[in-house]
Length: 214
Image 1 (cartoon, rainbow, N blue to C red):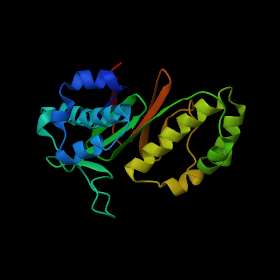
Image 2: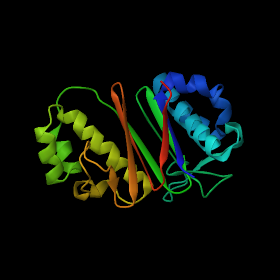
Image 3: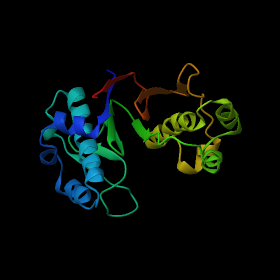
C-alpha cells in the first residue's frame, strides 16, 4: 500500500474540506486563533484539515473521525511531529506557507514540505548554511538559483520531518540536485512537485500518490 499526498491553494483546500473548523480539536483551534493574520490562520486550518483528508483516503475513514495529536517531547505545548490518535502507526505530515498547504499520509514515516518562491536573488548566506559544496556549485550554474535552492530545501526539510536528519545537519546532507534521477536519498523516495510559485517535496519509503487540488 502506497501513501497519499495532497497539495493546493489554501482556499481550494478549505472549500474541499467543508467546515474545516469542525474537523480540528480544541487545541488546534486555539493555535489557529492565536494567529493575528487571517491568511495565516486559514493556512493553519487548511493544513490540519488536509492531513485528515489524506489519512482518511488511506484508511477509508471520514476525515471528521480522525484526531491529530502533536507533542514536541520537550514541553507541554501541543506542537511537534503530528500523529493520529486512532491510527498511531500511520505516518502523517503537514506543511503550510503563505496561501498554500500540503499534507501526506503513509504506512510508514513520511515528511512533507512546501515553500513559496518570492522571486528575486538568492541569499547565498542561507544557501551556504543549508547546502553542500557540490550543491552550491550546481546552484551557481543555475539560471534561477533561488528556485533551485528552494527545490533542494524542501527535499532536505522533508527528510528532517521524517526524522533522518536535523536542521543543524543540512550543510552535510548531500542530496541529488533537483532534476537528477533517481530522486532518492538512501531508502527514501523524494516526490517533488511545482505549482505556480510554490515547490514541494514528500519523503517516504513507499510510493506516493500526489494530487494537486488547484
